[in-house]
Amino acid sequence: MTHMTDNHLRRLRNPQDGSAHVVIIIVLVVALLGALGWIFWQNFLSPEPSHKPAANTVKDEDPSETTVKQEDTKLYDTDRLSFEYPSEGWVVTDHDFSDELALIETSDYQPNIGMGIDSGAYLGVYVTTQSGPPPADMGASDVTTRTIAGTKGYSYKLAYEGHRLQAIFSKNGQAYNITMQYDDDGLNDSWEHAFDMVLDTIKIK
Image (cartoon, rainbow, N blue to C red):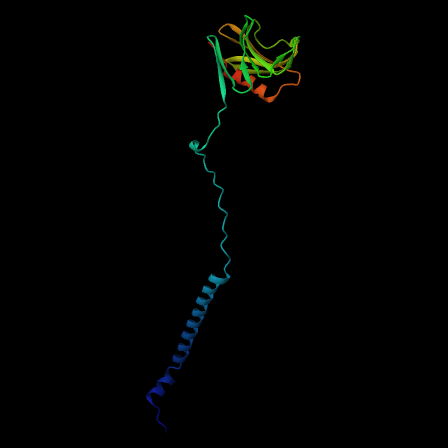
């Protein structure tokens, strides 16, 4: 009878030893393949992260960097009233009537023999007895309530003996009328702007 060596006997007693090594190797290979697969997926197959567009940012304007062009104006100033008017295209002229407090006209102003104007426009400030909104029988249009000289007043258009812009207001118990008359070619933006400027800046002393 052939004698078996001790090693051979051990192998016969523990047949699982070889299988355990195989299982460990398989687990290690699977783990390695899983790790490599994970790295491959992360670097090559994973979708690109979505990049949200940056939100639009609104930069507050620095007032010191903003240059506001101031309009060039002149000041009409007497002991009774003052107002601003555009420095270009308008000149101060003498007023001939006792109720006339101020008179300016365009540089191309030409009156005609009647009550109208051949060219240009003039603007006058007068004392008056009329107060409140214009009567309906005057034919006023575009009547607007507005603040004039710090008090309630009215501005409107009037087609009477020519074409006019007018305003009425009362201050310290006295009623005042501001009238701009212009030629038959019609009201232009610069004249209307001058009228509004006088209404916005007039002060009664």
